[in-house]
Image: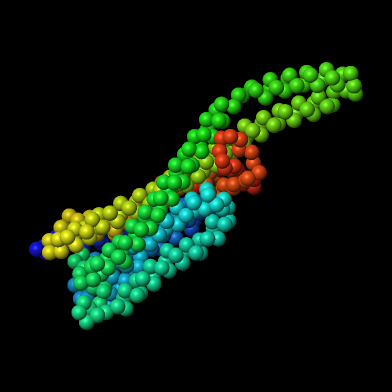
Amino acid sequence: MSLTDKQLRAIAIAEIVGGSASLLGFAFIVTTYCASTAFRKPVNRLIFYASFGNAFAAVASLMSRDGVIAGPHSALCQAQAFFIQYWMPTDSLWSFCMAVNIYLTFYRRYSAEDIKNLEKWYFLFCYGLPLILATTLSLIKTTGRGKIYGPALIWCSITEPWQFLRLVCFYGPVWVVSIATFSIYATAGVRIYRQYGALKTAKDELPVNRAMSVTRSVSFDVTATAAKGSGSGPSMLYSTSIESQHSRTRSGSDNQATTYNAMWSYLRYSFLFFLAMVATWLPSFVNRVYGLINPTKPKFGLNLAGALVLSLQGLWNAIIYTSTALPIFKAQWASIVKSWSHRRPPTRVTGGEAADLWLEDVRFDNRYDAGSTSSLAIRPLESSVVQPGDV
């Protein structure tokens, strides 16, 4: 029993609506990212790169069932299948790259510049490997099964005679990369949370007035000794040394806490991108497994859900991009309103009024004394100012 014409039309409409929404999300990301440097932070930068794959996947969704209607040997059907195989899985690869950034920064002490230098390799990985696979599949053809690309009910993709390749070449790589991504997030998240908790506890236990009391007692003793000798100079120097020592200890705890906040913020938003990717692929994967078990009884609900969520990739990423940059949008809007009220051109917002410190403001330093609160010594970049909007 196949799907009815009415059900197929509903799926086609869902694909067109989802593809249109994704293209709008892509346009929004590109426009805001190019309009201001305030949006060009590590997470947003990778989402920006991933949005190009979303745009081409949205184009494939907009083709809807036109490729199926045109026939298996038509250029439209082959192009749609190629686009789906090439562009749709790239989201999972970019999510993995975000996790790799966490790993390299937290475990390998990579700097912001080191991370940025890797992005060209991320491009080759995320857009190069899928291209090789998609091109290879487009060239394979046998007498018994025909071409790999062709009609697949809701759009052109890997055809039914080759449906085992859908799990091996389409869903398989996505889930393998997703498992690796989740492993990195879970490991790094637990470690960051534990060290941040230990650091916060140690910081809270530092006595506020301890430095002052020690300074008074030492100053009195040394001053009494110096009175018999050559003056009070050594007393002042010694007192200053003790006082600044405690000050650096407290300041070091503050710097480490700020840096862990930065790491936690990056982890939170990149993991959100990962969750959106999983939510996108899960209904379609369930539909594919059901199709293997019941090849002659397609489920309308599963096909509709799979077509809709996959075509909405660009919209999900635009929502995540907006959530990470929401403080920047607020700052931009406040600047515009202020300029209107004073009737002068809006001031340029560079992200200085937004939310958190991020990876590009983090540097690991073995020379810094972390005390007994952490096995890692971390501090912000000396040349950077901790701005509340560097997301």
